[in-house]
Image (cartoon, rainbow, N blue to C red):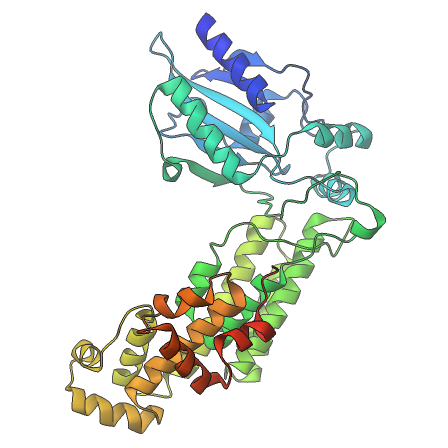
Length: 408
């Protein structure tokens, strides 16, 4: 126990967080707070704290976890076996994924309806360390190694957004209190917005799946009195823009607006971040799927199968014969059928898809132009430039100068 005490004290001081050691009976057998204060919104209520973390000490936890609470905090839960062979859990935290502005804290207090002195709440959030998600992963790995003497990969760490406010914010450096110029910051990320609308407009379901896993979003503030109201307003704007993108992608306006209205009405009845995010994601999926179906119904099943194969292998060197084998038809029949329905040859369509992907990479990524052609399996840079200019009227460099959206 003496060694554990020294270890916990070292961990708490090293990472500037409080630490608790809890046994399977729910007893806090060791704690180290230092000069840190507890969150005034839940005070010294152990059972409320456990519920907040979704933590049941009687249930064995198989692996370390990063827990996001409804109060914007992150806690680290690391199970280990004590020298006496008793299973215990170390709870390390809290820390914040981003510094909170005053309006965000006011919104949190108003949304939770919990009684607390606002000055004390502001002081608490000002004292909590801000630690990035990447750094949290490293801390979990280090503490687990110290307690369990085993190495764990990042993929082995559970990441648990609890029911309630599963906040996804962009980290803002500096003071918790904004300057007059920062009063409305941070706003949504225009790059991610353009990516999403492009995906909906093109009906790319697989790409939408990748988009939903990009990580923390940079959200704006559309209501200073309530975080939930702000999330709803942002969701309404996002769904409306997605409906417009779907119309541009070929979906009938009546269907697009009907879907938009349905999800916006549903959004108004929701009360948590998690439910609002899920509703918006379902709206994006629904609109994207409908655009995809519209595009697919223009061609026969065989041609649609070939088009999907080409898109899914756009980063590979694709041959005409390979596509024909995949479709179960002869190469000659593929040429005739594809040209009849799509009005361009198979090879021309392959070039078209690869160039569209190249345009996407130029607009939304920092990939060097010299690497894009190679990634898309063009034989050399000069051939890539020739084909790119054939389809866009510009060289890759010229296109980058007018369409690149990543800040340098």
